[in-house]
Amino acid sequence: MLAFTFPGQGSQRPGMGRPWVDHPSWEVVSEASAITGRDLQHLLLDADQHELTETANAQMATFVLSSVVLDAIERVGLEPMLCAGHSLGEYTALAAAGALGFEDGVRLVAERGAAMHEAADARPGTMAAVLGADDDSVDAACRRAEGAVWVANYNAPGQVVIAGERDAVERAGALAKELGARKVLPIPVAGAFHTELMAPARDRLRKALAVIRFAPSDIPVVANVDARAHQDGAEWPALLSAALCNPVRWRQTLAALADLGATVLVEVGSGGVLTGLARRALPDVRAVAISGPDDLDVVVDAASGTDSWHAYAAAHQGERMAGSDRVVVAPATGVFQPEPGLACVPGPGALAVVEPAVSPPPIGVGDAIGTVGTAEVRSPFGGAVLGFLVHPGERVVGGQPVAWLRAAPDER
Image 1 (tube, rainbow, N blue to C red):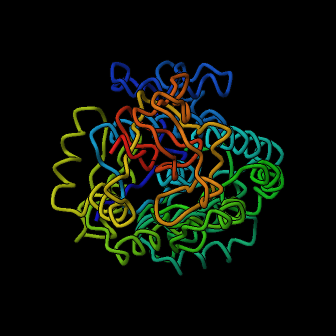
Image 2 (cartoon, one colour):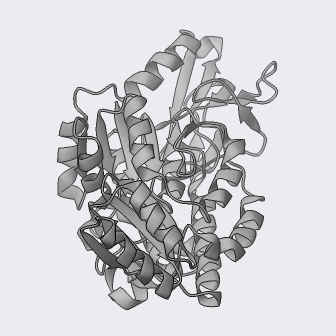
């Protein structure tokens, strides 16, 4: 079973987008730049480490590059059966699973980054990785430090991240060494993330989450807060809000992915930090990272032998589709939106069913049923649209099936 993992803040580095500039998926950067009104290509190609360390920049750069890599993987025909993202990466995981539209994802990440930047300015903090100590020892060190410091990430066996006010983090690090830690390494971030110091950011993020619709997803996404798989879109606003002030349970998340059947983990984004953590935590699961387009072949090779999502989706759609049914495919790559007259509601499996389902609206040959970016999606068949195979706002690639219709008698 193929699972995608998405890195969070801290994985950014200068020039991180350069390997992808000539790949067709680089167009994602232009789309995100148009949504935010920012030159995101500059962040991915020309920004130095200082500029990329700023919270708002680090989060947007990481999200957009992961989206580029995700788009490239989808173009070769691979989709996950499970997803998870580390901290910020949770937003990319939700986009990959179809629970969060790309445009909404870009706007949420922009708001999250700005909110966390403000919170860090109001109460400065830092983070440090504690290596070679068990979870309980690190937690005890934070408690004994008698200050504003907490465990922020449970990353892997022997790797725990602490965060808080600088002096308290230094005291907790020294105590952790007394309790058996091998090293304590500072992390280049601008705040004490996943601690109580982020409470002001949580209030602002809640307001942004309240206006976003999260769709139900066929692909389970394992959440940071509880290390459990979720598919109900209505659960995500509370989970994402809670994640700001609570530790990332990544070691537990990896265990949950394995328990759910993951045999191959693909890190989708910059660097290979999550791949290293997975190899330590799950030695029996194959973990691979993508640093550039040449690594796509490595991913395809790693995924061979797994139950592909395409086979899964085809099998389930086949149970619902009659011999007179047809699919309409996307004419280009971009964000899909159905025609306003074809309102759809969540249906079984991957489908969004056209409403009202008892009387699907008729269409003629060449009628528009939606758009992909600026391109119209026109049906080559006449009949009735029964539903969509992707959610409104979901990013699709050219040739991907987007709609399901029942052909008129003379079209069968």
